Amino acid sequence: MRAFGEVAILIAVFFAGIALAWPRGDFPLDDDQYYGLPAINLARTGHMELSIAAAPNARAQVLAGSVFVKIFGASFESLRLLTLILAALSIALVNRTLALSGVTKFARVAGSMALAFHPIFFWSSCTFMTEVPYVFTSALSLYLYARGLRDDRFALVILGGAAVALSWWVRQTGVLNALPPIALLAMYRDRIAPRWRTHLALSALPIAVFAVIFFVRRDLLLASPGEFGSLVHMWSEATFRLPEQIALVRHYVVFTLQNAALFSLGLAVPAAFLLTRKPKRWDAIVLSIGVVVIIGTVYELVSHDTLIPFYSKRPCCDLLYGNVLMNFGLGPPTLSDVWSTKYEYPFPISDNARVLLTWLSGIGALVLFWAVLDAWRMRRRDPRPNLVLLLAIASIVISIAGLCVSSVWMDRYVLDAAWPMVIVLALIIPLHPNARVAAMVALTIVALFCACATQEYFSWNRARWASYYDLRRSGVPLTQIDGGAEPYNAFEVAFVKDWKIKRKMSFGPGKRRYVIAFHEMPGFRVVARRPFTGWLGLHHGEIVTLERMQ
Image 1 (tube, one colour):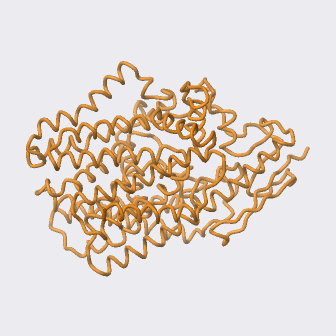
Image 2 (cartoon, helix red, strand yellow):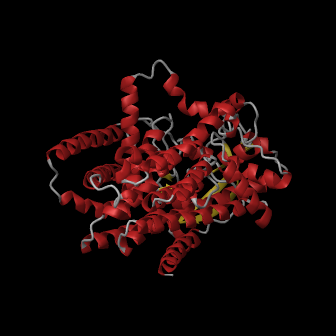
Image 3 (cartoon, helix red, strand yellow):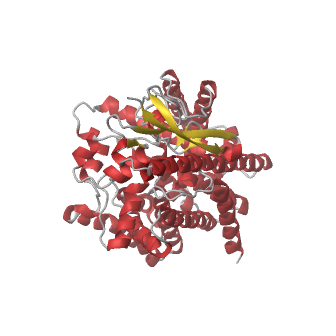
């Protein structure tokens, strides 16, 4: 009963933040249309047709979404409700996973809240993107594996494999969720579980099933082979040699640690107290290498004027424009004037603040690097009592390795490695009173940021979509409206059959008569204005509808 009460309070706090953000509006956000429209069509027709513009074969997500559409109506708000429920269940799973290791209540609460108010997780909870469903299925598999190995129960390990299968029908990379228990069982054998050979065979079963499906019915794992191939094509290019490969891995590892430090601030700050320990000789050598690599990469970012938040006009270092953290707000500003980088988002932070944020995130990356390294070194000699910690560390390492296969780095992709990071940090943060105070202050700051930034994102999107439908009601054909990425992708691209044609298209191609934008632009006259407010009234902006002058 106490466990239920603890989880209920955590979820209530999470939904209080969601209420402040007020994520209302029947419209797709970012890539929502690629998963939401198939779910709506499945509910209406009973036929599953996935968007060719999406690489993940999100059959499980689409199927679950269609059930919610049938119950609550054909809208993106119905689909958003499903994601919010999965987010709440993910928070509960992280809390119960932490409880398996017998940590204090403070650590359980801090870890759970760090996930609930992780900015990418919080923002994604208000969409129908694959991020939160993937975290839920991944967290479910980790919890089941941890319990199954701890209690020596084969049934729970089999259920963990079923959760892995569920995760690869959100994203095919979900097969990686089977690797952490395999890695630990191979390394520690009977020190993890008495009947370790059987556990190892059962843990490997999902890999075997995935391989059979891949070779027999690959279409069940890939929505679009062409889209998926575009994400990994570099590894087949002759010019992608060892120096470029090393640079990519270095960038992806450092960017992921930076992102985790910045977005898990409530745990990264108290983890800094661990740096007071004097490292041993070999640890000092490894830490020194980490300092050189991380500080060197941060210097590279600053020297190229590619600063956090990553919305530079000159992106470098394997970064892709389109991150969730944009202009110190949440959600990519996908209207053509800002998305083209010709104009800034209406509420940018100063360059000096961005430089400071980039360097601070680099220091945070060092803290996380040392914290994870220290945790592995201290606990690896006694694996069974530290099973949850070691599974989470293995999950982080494997997720980052999987990310390095892709030619695309965006901050929302690192959530795969960031959610088990909250488990690791919650298990190792010191119980010093100052560390607890630092954790509570940092968690509060990040939670307020999540609510305020997401509220602004929905506010300008409601204004954008209202402006778009005003034009449509007045008889303007959609091919004459540049309403940004989402309207174009939802109504003109989502089910284009020829992948190559789709890739040649960009939102708002050609000179369309009407443009919906954040700014007035030369060569256009303003025909309508829609004000919006952000950060709970601290920001005041407007969406303008522009008509091209003849």
